[in-house]
Image (cartoon, rainbow, N blue to C red; front, side, top):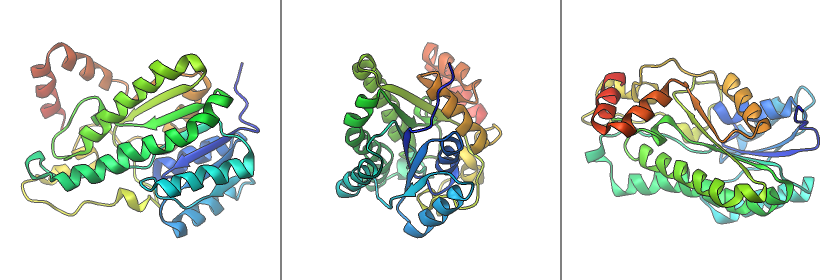
Length: 271
């Protein structure tokens, strides 16, 4: 039976541009009420206005997911307006470019705070409402959360942690009705209005020019954010637990588990 999203409420972090905005649009066009959040109030307001144009119910709450008070306000406003929550999409985050030797402790703190702890902060705030609705947590991870890559600094460590956290949520809360979807995409095509959190990296010493290409130079076509967003909605409808794109990357992950040396060789060849 096809899921009806009418009357359902979705919160999307990092929703002012890129994949987050595409996910918000995908849920909204199916009838859900959507709350988008990001740090830049001006970009957020513009995105919400465009998403509302076809007649969709889209609200905007400016918030920084690295701040407890902002996250508490985000969910308080959502519940105050709609009275429920059915989907949390943890999309806020960013990558970086650096050799691992040049990646500082401050770099690790910054990426772990945004890419992991911001996600955990939002999930903890949303859990009581999602358990009540037997709802969904969608964590936007990365191929780098399954197999590390060169030249991306603290990014793989942060995304590996997202992978582990998603599994823990499933193991402990699936029996209570929570659906957890981990999305591991490769490079995503850039769009207008991309969230400022996904800023272009300043050149750092020791990096080849290819490191500044999408995905750190991974040899695969950039994914369409609109198509991926539609797949994410469908994965929620079927309560799928993992979505890897491109799907052929699963072969690399399997081979790397069997032979880490072979996995390293393949990563070098593919980036």
